[in-house]
Image (tube, rainbow, N blue to C red; front, top):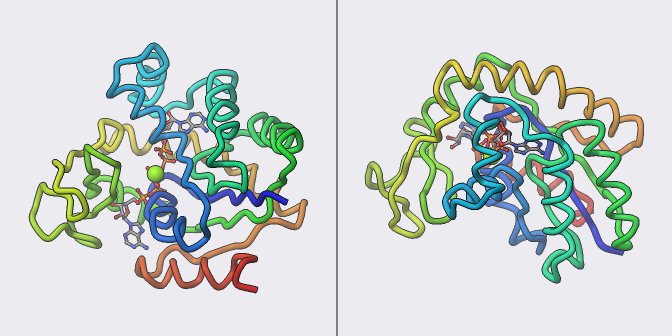
Length: 218
Ligand code: AP5
Ligand code: MG
């Protein structure tokens, strides 16, 4: 049966960093709702313009728009054997919609690693983050610096600071997470799927704990 893994955690917890590190090992495509919105914005699609209005304020894009976008993405052939979801679901309505979608696709959520990081650490992580223009590779000026400042180690493209990584927008995103997304911790715990991972450790150690905890590694 197809295997879907959801990376849960606050903004800056390291969902994208860890997804990039483990997606190949798990042989699951990395599906990031935030990356898809940013990709659409780069291409100046209607979806991208609509999403940017919410993202730049640190608010969530409405459920109906987000659910339709993920439904389309998960229906593509590369997700037939499963996917590593990063940033979706983010509300109880999205979690319900996901379980319906996966049932139609003949799959189910297999595990929900929750990367836990205290709020005071998140701000420093986000305001020091540098993201690659070409493919969204993630760096940090202190914790994961690129070899050459401003330049992606993996594809040489320019590194930029996300519009929503300004200090005031970061605070709003953390509040929105606490109000709308945190309830999913209980939701998945009640279904026996939650695996808590200590996200305060260095990047490589978090990767090792994730791989050890996920079902494929026993
Ligand atoms: P999205 O792009 O998903 O942002 P987010 O959830 O706020 O999470 P981030 O990408 O900021 O953090 P991350 O956990 O991926 O951390 P990262 O690995 O980069 O969403 C953006 C916006 O899109 C939302 O605000 C919303 O508007 C919209 N949206 C997206 N999905 C939606 C949905 N489902 N519904 C509605 N709206 C939606 O790491 C952060 C930094 O820390 C990096 O610099 C990294 O190098 C560093 N770092 C990572 N791990 C460590 C470590 N262990 N130690 C030290 N530094 C570390
Ligand atoms: Mg991310």
